[in-house]
Length: 104
Image 1: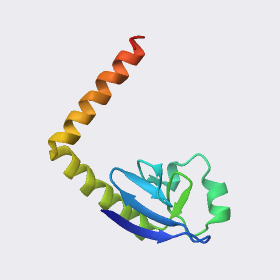
Image 2: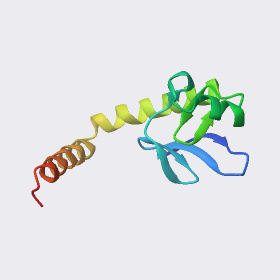
Image 3: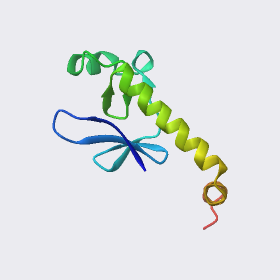
């Protein structure tokens, strides 16, 4: 189930699905960042002066950011209680550790 956040100026859908903010159906970011802490704050504000947050390359207003964060939090809560998601996270962690140790 995806939560619609906004439509971009060029007609692409921004929505939260699973644990990611999606842009036109493709994962864009796993988090919503306050623009104050963003390294390209001034470049973002030149293009989108109404922006207060970003999710990857997507500029968001405060209301859009709150909606996206709420949807991400809800999806994270659901995933944390899902046994299949727990197993997937454990397997991903084991694979990552094996990769770091050079085991294939």
